[in-house]
Every structure is written in C-alpha cells, then in structure tokens.
Image 1 (spheres, rainbow, N blue to C red):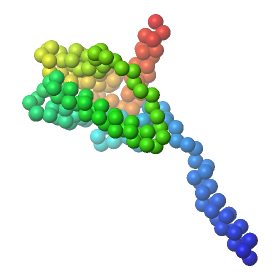
Image 2 (image 1 turned 180 degrees about the vertical axis):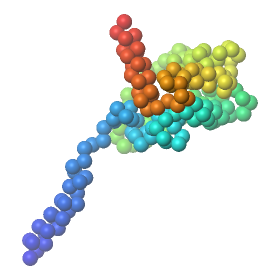
Image 3 (image 1 turned 90 degrees about the vertical axis):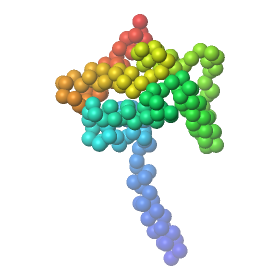
Length: 182
C-alpha cells in the first residue's frame, strides 16, 4: 500500500512539472533585440502599445525624459546637470554590479579612460548642442530624433510601424558592418 501511494504521488508530481520541464529556456529573440524586459512591448516609446510609434509619442517621450534631466527646470541641461546625471548613472551601475556580485555573477571591470571623455559625453556636448552654448535644450534634443523618425517613416504617414523600424535597424546594421569591414 505504501509503495502504491509513493508511485502515485511521484507520477502526479512528474505530471505537474512536465510542462515546466518541456519549456525551452528563454533566449533573447530578434523581436526583443536581446532586451528581455521589453519582450511584450512594441517599439521603444510606443506609449499606447499598438505596435506603432507616432511623432506625438516620440515628442512626448523626449519631453518627459528631458524634464527629468533638467533638474532646475530652466529649459536647458547644462554641464552641471549632465555631470550629476552621469554620477547618478555611475551609482546605479555600481549598485547593480554589487547586487550581481551577491548572486555570484561577476562582470569584468571597465578599463580606465583617464581624462578621455566617453563617446556619449562628446555627443552630448558636440552633436546635440547645435548652437555650442554649452547647454542643451529640448529643441536641440528633439531635432535629430525627429529627423531619424522621418527617415524611418518611409511611407510618410506620421507613424513608424514595426516593419519600418525593423527595416531601418537592418539598414543601420548593414551600414555599420560595411564601415567595420572598410
């Protein structure tokens, strides 16, 4: 009797765990571009999650992000605000790295850059600061993003679909690979 009960309970346990065992481990898909947390979302910035990005959604997302960057609400992000953002990002990175170390995950240290600025810092001061006044306004951030949006919106309907976004990504990847090969 005890043997029969043991067999029945073991069989029931296996049946209950079979679906879990049959599942494949999650891999980054081409759809999520390796970003698991975005697996169920459409395009970045797609607020209503309809799979398309409108110019209004793009502008609203940029304005929201800019508002968070502009700590003193003067309508521009200056060098002090940029440095504060950089330090906050470094602190979040260090906290995340410590959390990963607690779980036994180690990441290699980034090489020291010395006084050489990060590529993004040069871009923030150079490319985005169109009038070279040392600060960046919402209009200066928005202009190149709208330009990219319009390039991706191949049919000119004011909406970037997932297909248009993927085509733009593929074209960008091809350009990058060509430049890398040269």
